[in-house]
Image 1 (tube, rainbow over the protein chains, first blue to last red):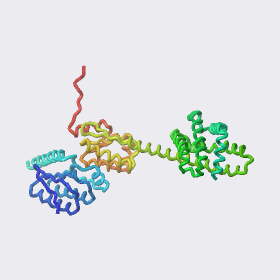
Image 2 (cartoon, chains in turn purple, brown):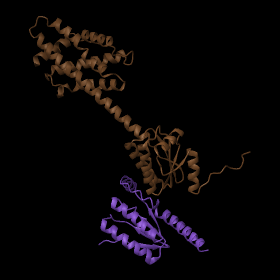
Image 3 (cartoon, rainbow over the protein chains, first blue to last red):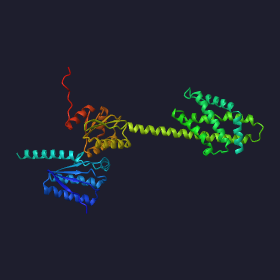
Image 4 (tube, rainbow over the protein chains, first blue to last red):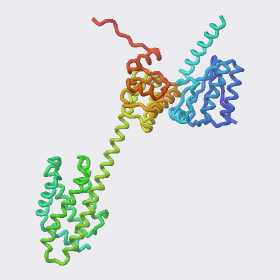
Length: 129
Length: 286
């Protein structure tokens, strides 16, 4: 079975979805990703969907599940590079991904995620004082 | 039947000039020149060409099926006249009158020339039938050209009404003008999202100064557009909400779930701040 690679870049994990997602693959990704967050002690997850052309409500829900699970594990999720038609489809399906941050491309996404991680680390440090 | 048409053709040929002048007189009396919109010369040319082609078609023994090839030239003349009149804003009656007003002078002429012939009635019936068909044909062409005009205008309106402007580096503006219905929202949304990709924009300012009214449906469309832009990684700011519209929104209990600013200028200054840019006045000039 296909697998989606999860790469560690700095303090966050980079997931690039380069093939059409089917339901089993999405479930597997969710499992792998939560495990990887714990094992690598990552503080952020960056999901690049720029190659994703077809989405359905299941994929939309999977994305928001991943975000919720990451939040519980103290990692922020950011989705980057969504195509216009994918965005329209998700909105029409009523999936607004309100808990997820977004950015235009991987570059911007990494910038945002590093800033967020720094912010959360500094507030944590303040809390310890 | 062909004999009747040949008789008709020869009658027209014999007194073409007389027929033409009486026809033009009838047309002018009926107001076909529309107080100078169509010049007398133009009308005379059109009538002359039509009579000539009609005579040729009748002679060729084509029968009364005006869709057949021998009628091709007659149809072309009529198409030209009808299209021109449709574009000039003539009514369908005025356009159809072009052919129908030929009936009276033609029938008069036939009655005089064929007074003692046995087949007068047959010729009258046959020519009446042909003229009726040609008249209906002009109406059909008229209708078609009007539909084309309407369709082109609709397309132009749709194109005109959805510009996405690059206001600054990474900042787009979308001035909405007119009512937002589902079809327009779809186009607006697609345009905006595509431009966000092309310009790598971070902020999109949606200006609704030109939207006459906001009801729940329009608000729903706005929320959808904002949500889609957010999914693409761009934030939206709504500007230009007029006082009455603000009251309506509150009355309806709507939540636009987005930052809103009173004017486009305020929205731009917020957008500049968010993207880490600044506009400064140069040191006093002189």
